[in-house]
Every structure is written in structure tokens, then in C-alpha cells.
Image (cartoon, rainbow over all chains, first blue to last red; front, side, top):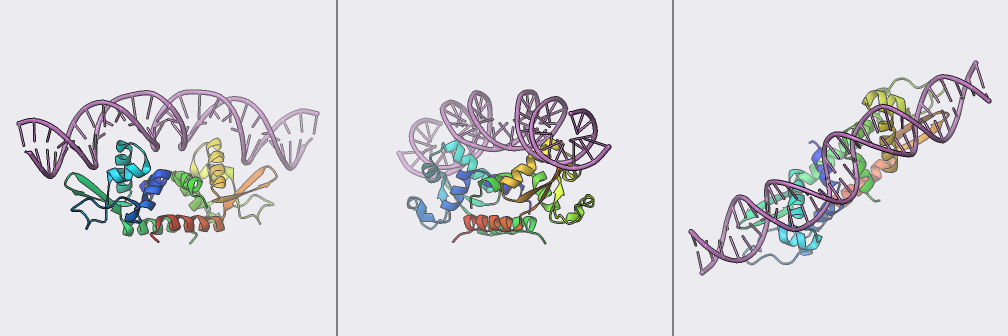
Length: 102
Length: 102
DNA sequence: TCCATAAATCGAGATATCTCGATATGCAGT
DNA sequence: ACTGCATATCGAGATATCTCGATTTATGGA
């Protein structure tokens, strides 16, 4: 596991906060009608909470996705983002492995 | 524990490699005569291994120090840097705490 | 005191990141 | 096909990081 991209993605307070918000779906407005079964959150909700422009948040979510922290799922015109818990754990293990003495 | 500075310090491959090198004193030339008891490594040795300029390495070591990853100890004209294992562990715990779901 | 060496600080050019508004793309409904 | 909405991508200015050589500061020895 290469930690280059993940570290870079974490090197921004807003992106870190988004990852925290995504821990709990109830940090956002209720799911859109017909999507109640989905864990993910649409970009517009994240944008509203982060108070940054739509393009910035879309870009941020792309970085978080490339870093392996989130999974994107397209449903119709919406993209729903949710945390990739497995990959997050793999990243933490990799950082420990690199940082911790033998 | 604020992870802002530590994350920023880790966001560079050379600084990460320096932290790895410092895990084992034998990654560097033998201690200077009269300093065999010290764990730390002088800037010149790190510079030689990293193949970057003296000012760059001095700057890097300052960042790693501010991030809490290393401890600097001045002895005469030399500054010896060594890992701060406790703080490194504290950082890892903080990252886990921030990243991992409850 | 004067010189030599190690490290820190300064100033600057090159490159990367941040963040925006504007535009493009994809999808749903009429 | 056309319109409207959600998201992605583009282009750009502002700011930060990278890295260097030059200079300064601190220390030790002749």
C-alpha cells in the first residue's frame, strides 16, 4: 500500500472533516426519496455542510476517492459517496508499519 | 493532539524516508569520536544520505521536530536528531482516533 | 582573537495546492 | 429533442511548498 496519495488527501482540514462527517449518515439531511437504502451522501449535501463551492467539493471527493478513503456510487444524476472502511484500515496499518519502529 | 503539522510533515517522501532511516542508527556512519553514547544523528550524515542541500535538510529536520517526530539535542557544534517514539505513537493513536469509525 | 566547521536562517525561483466561476457531461422527465 | 438538475472538468489567480545558494549564528580549537 502506497501512502503517498492518502497522506496528501489527508493534508487538508476540510477533507479530514468530510471523512469524519461520513462516519455518520445523520450528519446530513435525510436521504432523497427513493434512495433511502443507500449509505452514501450526495455531493450537494457535503457541499452545503462544508460551505465551499460545488467544484471544490467535487474535486475533494475525487481526491478522497483516489486515495481510497471513499467509494463513489452513481445513481441516476447523483453520485453517492461513502467511506471505504476496509481501505481506511489498510491505510492506518500501512502508516503504522512505516512509522513504527520494528 | 493536533495532527495538522504531523500530517503536513509526513506529506513528503524524503521526510518519511528520514524517519525510517532514524529507526536504526546503523543506517548512518559511526558516531563521531566522543559521541558514541548518543542515539542521535547529525545533520551532515542525514544530508549525505538524502542527497539534498544542507539548508533543505536543516529545514526538513525543523519541520519533523515541530511535528513532534524527532528530538533535537545540541552537543557542541552538532545537532543530533533522534526519533521521538512516544510522540510518534501518540500521533498514530490520534490519526486512528480521527479516521476510524467509532 | 582568529579561523574552521556545523547548523540555522534568509531570499528567491520553480512547482504544487487551493479555491473559485464558467463550462461541459450525463441523466430524467416532458 | 429539449429543459433542468447534479456532478465533473477546465482555466486561472492566490497562496503554499520545495529546494537551492548565500549568509548568519554558534561553537571549538590554534
